Image (cartoon, rainbow, N blue to C red; front, side, top):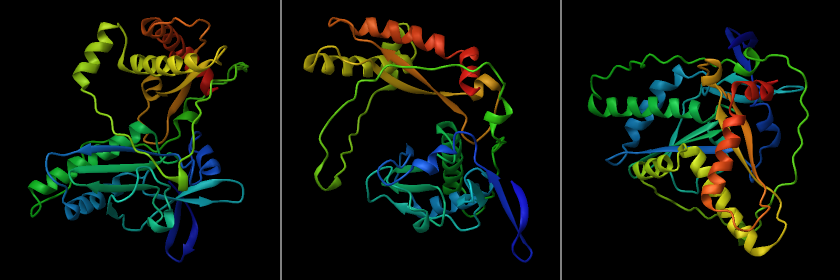
Length: 309
């Protein structure tokens, strides 16, 4: 973080810029499109909220990426260090609700619990999925350690390399401008719930079985699930209409492994997988083959550098 000026005598203001991806989210977020995502861990025993609260207080000073509040400047948003005490809460509402920072000590993330599950919900301006997973893993590690050695507990971070750098800027390479065009995508339509009601669907799948099925098709889990999603939409769309628009799936790609980055800020790119349903008799295997070819082509160092540029 950068220190600049004094809001109160003797207390410098510590602040930093938003990363290149984060700049979009504050400008477009609202209660309906809140850009909050969730990850969770289910333990074998019921959560002790007192220990969870202490674990959060112990680890947060190590995560400059998350220990911030969002400020609005004259022309742009920026992060400022947040010295308030984080709070946990018992889950009593639907997942990924709008993050009201005024009710959340100005933090841009929320930790909640329900029975034996611990949830972390994050406003995407802070970090991406991998950054959130790193934080939640450290929280669970500290929680379990506290639970076992509460009286003699001393927090020892696990050698984490926590860099809140903007890896987009660091790895930017000027390239010839590319022009991008795509056909209008097929839109999934439905009816709004009365009174803005929310449906939450829980689905469970055995990872061992999923790996086995994906392997039998010769593709990764990501490719397999993307193909299944497209195939499901294709079947529904073809039943209802002819000449359907292309079915397009946006897939986030973690860029850290391409550029040897360890940032805990956002560092991802989006690739588009397009399926043009020119016929009415595609099989799932056909779509798996098409998806796999597109992903192999688009998730390459050359294409990723073009996206960054």
